[in-house]
Amino acid sequence: MAFTATVSGRRVACGPDQSVLDAFLRAGAWMPNSCNQGTCGTCKVRVLSGEVDHRDSPLGTLTEDERAAGLALACQARLRSDAEVAPSGPGGGSAGRRTHPLRDLDAVVVDIEDMARDTRRVRLDLAEPLAFHAGQYVELTVPGSGARRQYSLANVADDDQVLELHVRLVPGGAATERWIFDGLAVGDRVRAAGPLGDFFLDPEDDDGGEPMVLIGGGTGLAPLLGVVRTALARRPGREILLYHGVRGAADLYDLDLLTRLSETHPNVNVVPVLSHESPPDGTFYRTGLPTDLFLDDVGSARGWSGWLCGPPGMVEAGVRAFKRRRMAPRLIHRETFTPAHAA
Ligand code: FES
Image 1: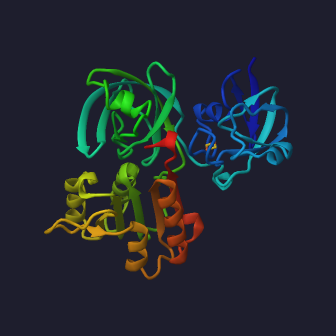
Image 2: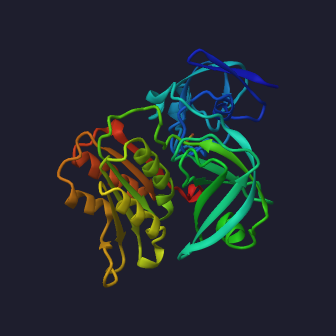
Image 3: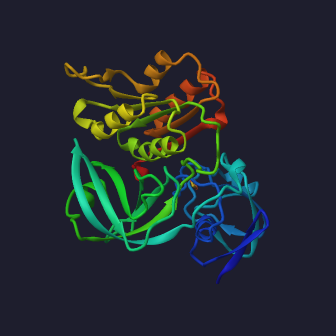
């Protein structure tokens, strides 16, 4: 039986097995969200009236005390009656943001490229173009298991027909080792849904063109490529500092694209960083952790915006580094990979 959920005066019908978040995003109504799998807490809501079923909400994200206090995770909760909820998680302040409706996607694989060690670029041609904000992600359904895995889009927003995903091999992974790196072929049909996530540059949110620093770990570079190129299209002279952190030189990719970007825009500084190797002779790569190098390179980031995408340790270190350099918390954007959220 379908019930309706009301958020900030907007009423949306939720199907019997549909999460509150899914219903809102498909209706084109913004609700804060990030992981869509119950691990980040961004979609936390307060249930003002009505009853919800918490389903698979992990206790680590939604404690017993929070449940008793009327909180729920919108990405997991199903309605048991009509309900009114209000955003109450870390993304609650973004209520009312402009968004593009979430929808199912019919896609065909048109290209697979090994671009670095254990890293593939996969291109998916869509039956219909997808409206999204640069930096968002799509969710692929793994054939056979029905499991869903999230991959950030490397596209700029008006490049909306052929989606580009960067995929890192996860040993034993149902989506990577047993599908994308073993059997996925050009011509295969793929089931997907998107766009999702709050890690994006809102094209209508003019921030005054202040400098940006972006740090991507491994395939965390993907959404940053969309964000950087979107920011430059809006303000070509904007100062941009982009660190790409990997273990070794064999893990770097898209260096030609990044070099072209910094040659075309002298205000763009690209820094490939190797954490486990010395840079090969004749390269401009650096050694260490990108978050430490940022602290060495930048005395004050007051007024800057910061963009972090990668594993949890890197993202947490990045947030600390940005705050130490006086970046305002509201200007720090983060997308964290978790094991089932590997972009
Ligand atoms: S916990 Fe719901 S979006 Fe992350």
